[in-house]
Image 1 (cartoon, helix red, strand yellow):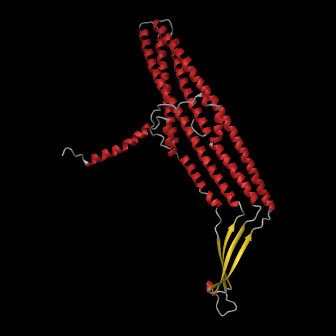
Image 2 (spheres, helix red, strand yellow):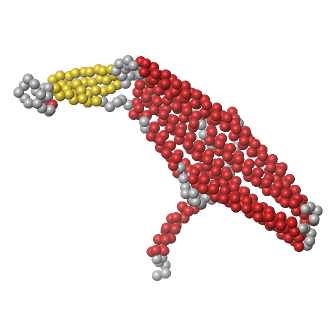
Image 3 (cartoon, rainbow, N blue to C red):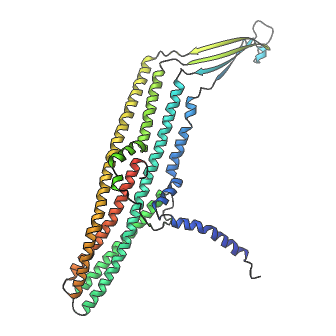
Length: 424
């Protein structure tokens, strides 16, 4: 029957159809940095580990403020049955008496709350560390993608220049055949083309290295395919890159400052707890006493520890005070360093922006006009080949400078977003 597909072929078609979306997804990944960030947030093992550690730290909060487990004690009295005809025994109903004591330790008032607050602060420290891990990972991905984009554009530019040199070579060969230019011009254009091809090999190697680096940041095999980058993220306007505004956002959103603030809160709570240890903890209990087969007596107990080791406690208090001071100093030092980094990156992104604008609006048009004039002059014999070659190199350098300035802006933007803890 013609209309029936054999079972092996049908199974192959099903398998191929099921794998096609996966392959398409693999190829599409890399077109934009946003897609890479979404993938990394789900797949990156380092961030996943830090996030799980933060969740584990959150689970320590309730136990920190819970009461200690009660204690049950059993005491067998007169197990030799002295004074009676019975033989020694270990059964509660066959000894002189059995005392059951149920005891519950009770910390001094406020200690449980302080322990719980300190545990919450420690959980926030772990959360802040997870945030630091992600912002640093995201900044690496953004920077590597900007470099990946730049190298791809430089490769394209290099190939365009090679095509241009080949056209110039055709003109040179014609003029050399007519005896209008020396053989040196024909040789120099070939040397220039060879040098450009050598440079292209280096760029392609760098492109391969950056792809491997991006795959490593995404926790993918190094040789996994990545699509050609299509676009860069837009750079915020100069008005949005205000130091004062971004400084306020940094103080409120930076995960490292969040972690340092949580460490400070934990140190404060531990200091209060250390002061509270000057007061005793308690233990209360109830004890039914069994005689033979009946309970005929009850006892109540109250116990407290006596905090006599005052010098030891004073040392602990001084340690807690120093730890609090250290947390204050660490938070201040972190804030100062982060603000200095923010200022440096804002200055750098502004310089890269102005460089791109200058080259785009002034240097590149001038270089193109110079090249057109040099090409016309060379074709008519008014200019030598060296002048034409220099004009072509100026255009190439101008375009390379634009691409590098764009990549520099993206890298600086990634650092700024890492510092403020969120995307602009």
